[in-house]
Length: 504
Image (cartoon, rainbow, N blue to C red; front, side, top):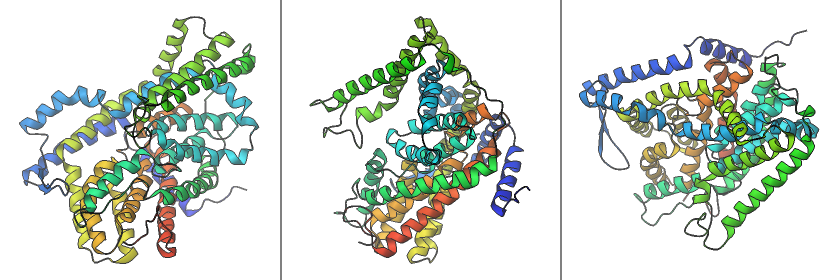
């Protein structure tokens, strides 16, 4: 007897059905770009402007139909495309990952290692690795989801469930970590400047949210795992797609020896990098001699990971006879880039839309006016905090850059909450959970198109509706979980970081 669907699953069915009736993503973003041109003209017609709370400067809405706007559209088109930050990162990472995949290394390694691990741990491991991956910043969003999809596929589970779990951890769980990351330093610097509007001696440090972030890692790992097994996998059902193994690595000669040599080569490479990092006065460390929060090592993590995949891929490929010359290496890399053709086309469209939205200043206008409206509402206590979290979560649909959004919000909300007795680090926590939770469902998230491209490898019919229906359960549960966690810290008096409590 077929199990009856619950209300939430029916709701997701509607979301998927409606979403998949939208135009092709390329056409959709071209349409949004045209809409942005018209909207900027209308706002400019009424001389709309806003005072930036950080700089104090008046920011006018600029029309894309003006002489200046038309010049921007024509002269920036190529730069918008080639300068789209995720484009280079994705293609570079796929050179290494694609090489390792094409020679059969990933397939064989998964068959010989992960297939033998306890199945119930797999889902939670994927979510945990995704969350922890934000130490490598955006590289985690590109690296972890496709590997998680491949792992799920090899163990007989739906690959889109693995991709969803990995992306939820890396995207929606972005702000959590067991270690101090670059995000902590970036946001705390902005918070300090905003707090000094009220108290010139106030300092918000990178460790002020550390305890909360540590607890968040374990809580979100459990929640993300449960969402995957209880909602996502039942929704997807048994995988009946047309994905097939490109390589039968069980038949490759010396595959076991190739894996061993690849592991040894990888460890040697990692050892050399570690040695280069920890030698005195290393050029890979920051001015304090560390690698966190910001250092050439972390800034260069993408090339370092690329070299790792190339080394292990080439080692395995030579051992099993898949690589006989340098031409074979370039051919395998070319094949992996060929697989990304649809992604490159999508990037052109989304890059134009994003650039038009930013240039027109519509995002800043909406953010500042929305914030001022929230401050005018007579909320107090946790009602105000929850209202602020929901506001920021919604604002993330318009401004996806965490630092840019916080630069707008912090000068408004940090002083306001300080006047109510709240510590600025507490306000920062509220901001971070809201900003992180909705990353994976906002159409402006720059990695939406790459995840959609990965999804279409396993389900060629997958579209935006499929994407949203899979990501929405994580966004909702992560946001609710984080709000509950904040309430627990709030009412129990638990510190958010060393010596940092809810109130000043």
